[in-house]
Every structure is written in C-alpha cells, then in structure tokens.
Image 1 (cartoon, one colour):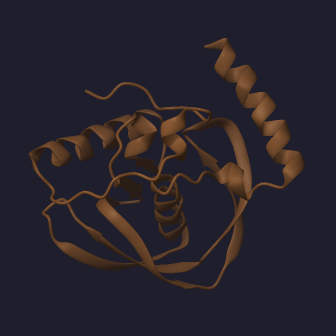
Image 2 (tube, helix red, strand yellow):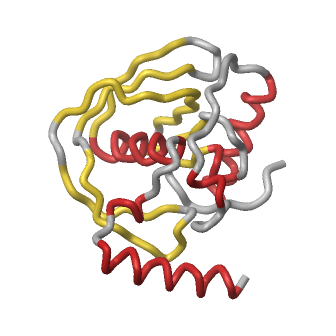
Image 3 (tube, helix red, strand yellow):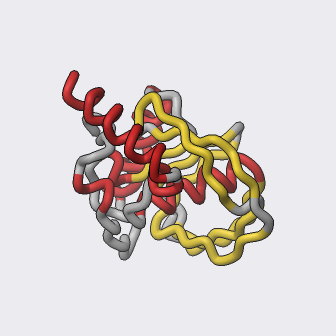
Length: 162
C-alpha cells in the first residue's frame, strides 16, 4: 500500500517521470491505490510522483468520470481561463493558474489501449494539473515572484512542523 503524499521541496516532485511501456497488473494495482490515497485526501487528481513513484501515471476523478492514465499528453488546447487551484503536495495553498478551457489528451488507459479524449472545465484543468506534475511542474511555478517567496517560506514552516 502507498504511504504518504510527498510535499513541495521533495526532489521527486521536480523530476520528469519515466514513460510506462506497458500497463501490467502492478500498474493497475498502483492506479487503484492512488485513487484511494487521492479520495482520502479529498483530491480530484494525483500523479504517481506525488506518492514517490517515478512513472508517468496519474488518476483523475471529477464527478462520475474516473480516469486512470499512463503517459498522458495534451495534444490540443483551446481557449484559456484563470482559476485558483490547490494541490495535495502544496498544503493550505492556492495559486491562480492560467490553463486551457478545453483539451484533447492522449494516453494509455488501464487496459493498455491508446485512447484520445476531450475534456472541458474542471476535468480539463485537473488533467492539465496532473500532466504538469508528471513533467516536474507545480502550481507554484505559475505564481508571481512575491507569492512564490511567501509560499516557499510558509511551506518550509509547515514541513518543519511534521
């Protein structure tokens, strides 16, 4: 079973994760465990590196839509909007992030099939957020410098308390 969610400052969160060649029983089990961790933390998405796994895997759950994705790539973006986002790896933090309103994403699903799907609204935002994680990018990267400095100080204090 997976342990904890990794917090800002831990090196794996800044690493570009490794491509998954094939979905095996191990990856299927990892998807299920990631969903459990994500739900327990009241999140809508979780990338494998957020639980210490160096693989391009993520899960997203918005409404009744549950996605288990390997090697997700955004292949088309349309429109843009700015909304506040939180992140399980950045506790008690929100950042205004500019993202595409609509996307087309390509990925391997849990059955090892290459899929392509459209996403809009919160689902599009969540998929983009998790793809960022798999590339080593976090919402703090979208923040203005003054906010980055304040957030880094706050997060250091939170991390030191643990």
